[in-house]
Amino acid sequence: MARTHFSGPLVTSDFGSVTQITSASTGVTLNTAAGVITTVVQNIAVGGEVQFTVTNSKVKVTDTINLSIRSGSTGGTTIANVTAVADGSFQVTLTNLHAATAETGTLLINFVVIGANA
Image (cartoon, rainbow, N blue to C red; front, side, top):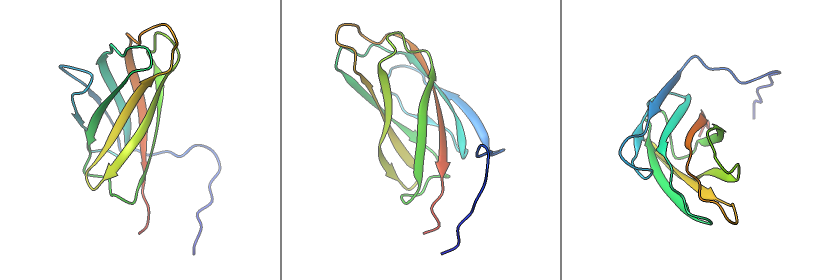
C-alpha cells in the first residue's frame, strides 16, 4: 500500500460556502471537497439534537468527512458530528451538551471530504 506523506495543513482549491435557509433541519447542497456551512439561527434545547443533510456530489460512501464548528456557538458546548455518509451526501448532527442553556447561535461549520481510494 502506498502512503502519502505531507507536512503542514491539507490544502484544497476546491472550496465553497453555503447558507442554510428555513430551519435548522433544512438540508444544504455544496459540491466541493471542502467548505463552510452557515446555519440558520439554532434553537437546540438543553441536551437536544438537530440533524441536516449535506448533498455533495464529491462524497462517496467510503470517504471520511472531517468537520468542526468554527464559530457562532452561544453556549460553547455544541458539537457537530457526521452521523451518516452515502454516495452524494453526508448527515450532520448538532448536539447541545450544555446542562442549562439552549444553543441559539448561527454556526459556521468547516468541513473537508477526505477521499478513500477504494
